[in-house]
Length: 306
Image 1 (cartoon, rainbow, N blue to C red):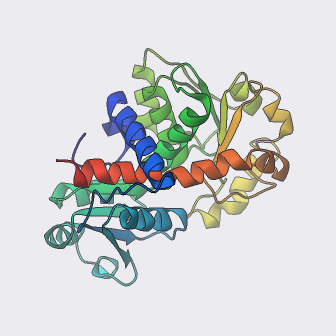
Image 2 (cartoon, rainbow, N blue to C red; image 1 turned 90 degrees about the vertical axis):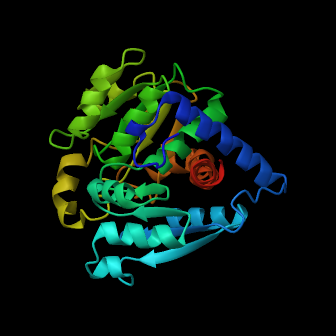
């Protein structure tokens, strides 16, 4: 693997498979009470410029279970929030810590942080990519369906960071990927260009969610307005409401026994109905739990393995 985890575009299929395999082992160790303090004495600096529940708790818990320690740095309370250049923050934290996780807005900030840091940098979320979440998604699908290659993944909703990372992660693992989103809300052009280069899996972008869901093994959605887009909420509701929703009717188009995934938090009645959410709650909360195990694998492979 490379020094950092900035986006799934940087990883090979072999890299992703290795992370998932180590994540499975981490989960086994934790469930069976086996000591796995591979990061004993190491520290992870966690920079949060966007609020979080799952990201903070899973990384902090993961570092504790690995024998290390996580440091929470709020954008408002640290010097980075007061205008300290990102390159200076990177070099300072590299003198103190063994890794950095950052949850922020611009992908360029994460890339710049990694450029100047001499320690691994992990993207906890940006507006462009959510690699840790999608690694957990892939881990959950593989757990329940025993494979990824040859399955069909469908995403319904905004062409946001989740859509971007699902397209890349799914295609790199040999999954066919279909995305349905309103016009003007397409995934990032860099991701669509990547999809054109894939020859061993099929990618489809369409406007009709039912068409996208046809024969899908996994149906995934996300909120219509992500963090930082609150002012667009009314406009987005007009574009999405009544069409881009995972509901019982949409699920009829999917393969019988299809999984549903949601990165949470979920707005029941908007992007997903309460009925479908509760019918697939076990899968969705397995997915949430697997953030912990997949991220422990990432931290071990970047910070612990020599």
